[in-house]
Image 1 (tube, rainbow, N blue to C red):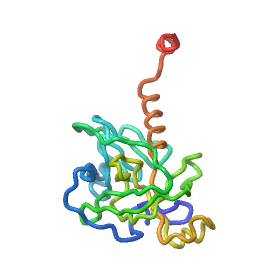
Image 2: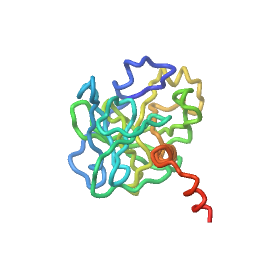
Image 3: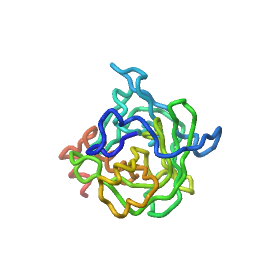
Image 4: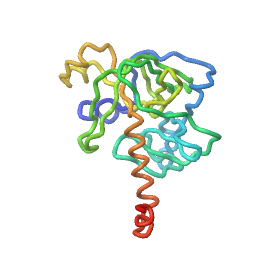
Length: 217
């Protein structure tokens, strides 16, 4: 997991938990999450979770390094990689206060889920990311769930798990809107993921002057 960067050492980014997600064995919706690993000079050293974005690409967090098939890392903590599938989940924007369930795999490779409700508060994790805003919810998440889908009750994906805030993080933030929360989990909302996908498409298929002229007719 990735706690608030300005407050927590980098060595903690993929460790810990802020509650106890529960195990599940089979579910037609939640089974869309799958395990991913770091590659390259750190083969299988780090693991996380991913979910299909469309039939050709999947999405996860970029703090899982050297991911096989990676094609784009965004300003936010997100990356897309090539991964074929027969279909993909439906995505949509989340609504503050709605019930959500974060799904992923823990360090024992067990499928786990943590349920809660989205919070009105949004947070920034890194000044270098610009104006990227992350959503918050009060469900538990744990090591290994980074990059996993956050489902709404209608079965649609509203974002991917990125981090959690510890009690010390919350105290340092001096955010009265979060101070009373027993736990705060961070997810990258669909709107930000979609924006990053648009950036990837723009750089991979740049519009030529001729195409731009035709499109304007």
